[in-house]
Amino acid sequence: MATTYPITPETAAEEPANYLNVAHGWKSWLLTTDHKRISLLYLFSITLMFITGGTFAMLVRLHLTQPQGLFAPETYNRLFTMHGVIMVFFFLVPSIPATLGNFFLPIMIGAKDLAFPRVNLLSWYLYIGGAAFAIFAVVRGGVDTGWTFYAPYSTTYSNSYVLSAAMGAFFAGFSSITTGLNFIVTVHKMRAPGMNWMRLPLFIWANYATGLIQILGTPVVAIALVLVGVERVMHVGIFDPNVGGDPILFQHIFWFYSHPAVYIMILPGMGVISEVIACFARKRPFGYEFIAASSMGIAILGFLVWGHHMFITGQSVYTGIVFSFLTFFVAVPSAVKVFNWTATMYKGSVSFESPMLYAFAFIGLFTIGGLTGLYLSTMAVDVALHGTYFVVAHFHFVMVGGMVVAFLAGIHFWWPKITGRMYSEPWAKFAALLIFAGFNLTFLPQFVLGYLGMPRRYAAYPPEFQVLNVLSTAGASILGIAFFIPMIYLTYAWFYGPKVGNNPWQAKGLEWTIQSPPTTFNFDETPTVTEEAYNYGPREENHVG
Image (spheres, rainbow, N blue to C red):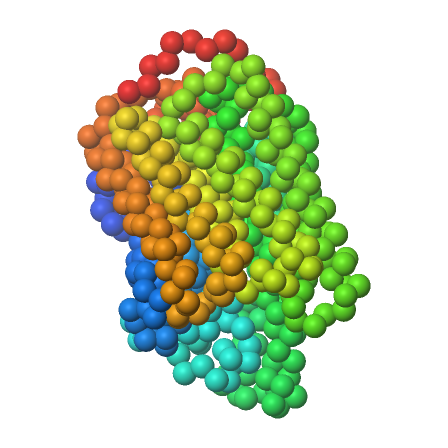
């Protein structure tokens, strides 16, 4: 009898031994409700979007090697806009939750799947629909508004494909909402016996907090994008002051979501780093309770600081003081995490496998990004730096130096569990070091450029800034190559890497107690949790590779 799709427990006996088996062809993937397969569909999809957005980034950097640029100013506007739209909405926001979170959240709490498997599949189709709208905008000539879609330019004056790109972001937003809802319900309702809140892995805490931001914040930006479309199509005076609108209203709505969205991107990465450091330091994370609480604190306080993006919009000085104070305050939970990670490594049995190298890179780069954010939180300094490359460098130190590096740490940490095979450790270590070097060469010069006054989003610049821009482009070239290397050796390892046991890192957690790769429903029997998280003992001989 033919296998029924989607897979159910009643038909599981007819299924292959694990989710990687492709004996039933493409239909078993496109109609699957297995959270592990859906995570791999996401992984493939966001990788394609990362390559697309990265291509636009390289074109931007090539343009800036010359003071007058290589492209027309209109073309340059479209290049950096499409880079931002694709990277933010289609890579940074979904990357860790939709891939590693989707794959491991049920396993790490002892569940056989997410609470709503069909909704999980729907979230991927919503993502693909949004990506299709964005790619359509690219093919038709792109968007020139900047990734923030600032009104009234986006609603009235731009002749580019704003509606298509906004629809893409809208669909991607609802994909994010459904994922967050699934995570929250799963954590509340499907934990294994004995898995109480203080035994949850920190990766789960991070994704739970992220889910709260996704379902509370994402509808707000969806409303903003809908209002952009309404004003653009119907010429209603919402944001355009020429017809009675208020352009500052758009910024309030947009940044009320978009600053918490920074934590949608970075919180799951912090969860990854907590898992990696605990494993390779062989210690329970120092101040576990404080790290868990800090994730929730970030999720709550992140909604109170949007006004620091608007210091130069003419808002009240007293309002600015409040937002400045709150922005300094929201940095405290992030600082707690960095301190506790450092304390975890202190006197630990630290080893330097590739996931740990990425964790070290994350701590260094994210700390620089966070500290430079304090400059931008100070009103007097932000007035001078707001429209410069200092902001570009700060943002990328947090997002690329933080989230992307954490994403790579998680991919390398859990790759043996996902595939049952090990990648080349020498190549992985080389890639990690090259990414760190290339990243710093790319973005450290941009801090200097911003301090010297080079404005962002300009197609031309004074000749005295050329040397620093050429250095930045050279770093971006190294970074592009460095990102490409893991794609090669991980793909090779998928098919030809040496098979490893169920727990090559000797890590703690339910995901390391099941076979690699996992079976369709993860556990033959629901496990019972009897010990605290991260109950590490002395290191034994490591059998990686």
